[in-house]
Length: 612
Image (cartoon, rainbow, N blue to C red):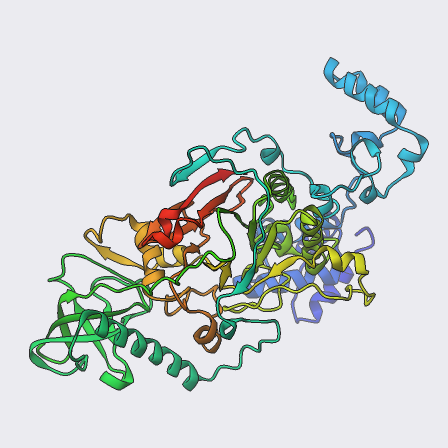
């Protein structure tokens, strides 16, 4: 600062009891002028520097103070305080807001193609266009945005830019995988009457459900009951006379049952496998398993199994045989409600590319549904993905709830009067949903807006035909049992499972899917991964498979597939968007006339994994 004197600097140092000679004062005054700071600011910085470095006030140390302290501390601050220049970046989005004079100047430096574009912009500009700064209600070329059914502009928040990678894709409609016979079959047809009901009214989950009230002893009771129930089922299935105590020493081979656990924090390995018995048979004791004599196995934490082995010391069980787990029976099918072929479309969020909040993929799917008119369409979350960078940062004009309602209204508008039944499944990744717990109640559309005003009757009618169900849930669709969950249990099992040898004739994805069926649970992993907030009281009532479904939907980030697993048609439709590009969805056809005659319901199914 121009007004700083050597006397002011000396007085500031006197407060700290520092003596300063004339040469030092002259150098310090130069620093005040160079960095535009007053005497007190300079002295405070010096005291911080000297106490940190443990140095005295000398000319050499003042030079170091300048080079290593002031340049780093004050130069950046000085740049921050400078007012930014009002530079205008000219691109396709801003070129329509510049003046005629600017267009002429830019035109002198432009290529012939760029000049042609500038002239078009100049002809389109009007005084009203130039002064209109509210871009929320105008579209490209400053023209009013036209609202249309299932339009991405309607679903997409104001200010979002369409994804260039998605719009420029060339593989739309490509079939990734085919399952079953597709001879002389068309996905387009007339909608038949479809009746959707919960498989059991006793296991429905509604929005009045309370959670976060579980007690430790109730959680322990649920976990113990899972061991006891599965152990009894396996004992009866394999004709085992008696299950022994897991930790009781025995010189003879014994059969035990329990839950697979890990003896430490971290991923399971063949040296860290424990077996936890139930309170009834083993008083809740654990035993280490020696798997060296077993030639093939597939294990994960939380798995309930029965094994045979020798426990000489009571501290380790040398496993000789692992009994195979068994699935639940299928529901008896009667085709009194329908006949012919039931066509089902399945799509899973996220419904926007990861770089922009553009709902064009969902719009394209709606066009496909309107064109083909399937009997049933299952849309699974996330709809407002908490992992999306813009949603996670909160940089939106709309609230999360408003963004979700806007999507539901457009889905309802596109399918209203179409006859296609729409099922909406929530996800733990949905930012707007109040229930971030698993199992998770279904969505609901409130009667009132965020500002307290009541929604109109026409708005409520748009979503009246949408069926909001819980995650997970088991549905009966014209007596066809469909099980589904939006939680990525297959990916979670991939991160937790260990295996050795060939288990049957299926690949790893098939083996992981089989675990869900054979453990009779939509989420058999224990403990769950960190991003799954599992409520065990709700899980005991709503998270188990009541029966083996005819169709099981398990969305995952793993490769999309349609497989026959023990007679059940298991589907991973993939995500509708993967990163910044389009993903896949599934088309499933179930020939209901064949179901009563087929031992395996999957033989009556055919389907395709298709790119959006």
